[in-house]
Image (cartoon, rainbow, N blue to C red):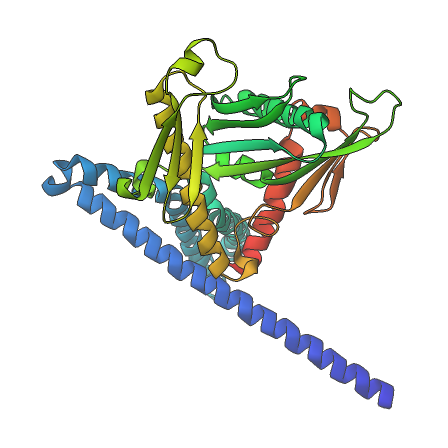
Length: 386
């Protein structure tokens, strides 16, 4: 009797837990639908505002509202299809509950109800995906910084390999690449390289690359065939539009000096190198890639804005619960995230415990499988916290 009693209590606990989960999921769905109603209403409100003469004759307001509406369009379009399918389900249920309805009509209603239910579920899943990933998709320009870490010359060569991997990945997607700054090592590696990438989905694809990257291989300089471990760090910064961040020029101190390193006679004669210091945050930027002081200043300001933007975004993330951070891992992108093992032709991403045995293809720019796995994991985490 005691065993039966224990099983009964356990079963009741399981049922209670399942009921709690069902109630929770229902509440979450209701909350999402309320939010979608608000988004739909805002979309319609923007429609009305754009049609008014006041907005039509004000280019700044018109552009701002059009951008806002453009961001909402995908979600609203799918939500309206969802509501149409939901209305169809209700109509089918009315027919099924009507005792006077013919059996053939009920059979058609049952079939249509099932199809519309499937359509509803698919649409809602797509809508939620758009909602949790929308912020990432909105950013279509990033600045990537790669720096050699421990490992001397081999680390610089590894930094070059990472740079070439990202360049090939970006070129395959026809993204625009712009070199901002670099420092070359004696054997052709990169002590540091900074470049921008522009195009649809750049942040949502490359945003996971920030962190420590480690390589295990026999270096070109190794005569005895021993495997060495070297490292490089990658920072991926969202490049904000002008409207995203405003910097008071009085908060920035500019230093002008002569460039150093290779570059011809002009380098040591003309003061073209620019150093910007943002006093409130202490963030500094150096730029001497161009012989033109004007071009270096423009690049330095772009980089400064991105670093300040990321600085304040990191502060915002730190204020939230760690589980709600938008990035996989710690959120500050300082941890070792990936190992490239040449002897085993293996790439391991430690954040999701994924190993792929196609290192040569990945370094060749074929990162799709790896990034898709990271995006899927990130999406699942965000859904849990939605």
